[in-house]
Length: 267
Image 1 (tube, rainbow, N blue to C red):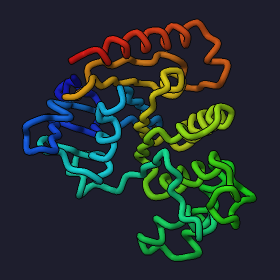
Image 2: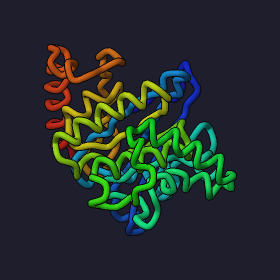
Image 3: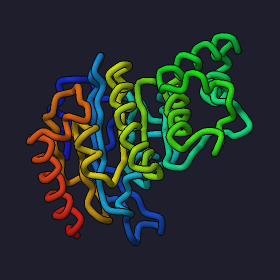
Image 4: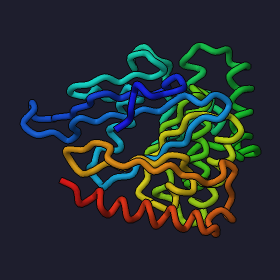
């Protein structure tokens, strides 16, 4: 789908010729998948992946994070094999904080693994805690119901960004949240994206969420999966909830919905 020879910028993520089989090649979950994300300095990219359940969306994120190897194909992060590339932050739908640690300790954990001095890592963690809107909660234990679901996801986002602010992978991170909290988290994520400019790869089933957050949307057909549709979201980079009232936003939601219906019927 992407043209690897027609790119004006360096590539931050490349997947080429990806196949995935779990039975020795008799059947393939993913077949012939290509994916390319260019590096946009001082801007970043916000890429959303859509697809039916079982299409392999989460698997693509695991490839990029180095948590899974494909049966065949090449995965590069910043031009290097994923095992040699800097670590990539990943936020899951399930709450992933360690409940016996405080918010500050959870956020600082990746720096502890890197051997960063305690005073420095706690200072940097405090900055991230403030960035995600959790100032005042630093010394609370990162567990429910001490913190709400939205607050626990803020902890996860801060922890991922402190480890590597260049790339953030998000696997349906707002799927378990109530609608009001989900809308708040969408706004928080757009604010973070504009402040520190990471490249975000975001998986969701929510088409309206995809259009609101993304500047590029890629769609995967059912197994054997690969990317078959790409929509460039030509909304202003700076967005707020008034964006959802514009004619262009409504048009894009309808366009993506129509394409997704066609994609999910592909063989």
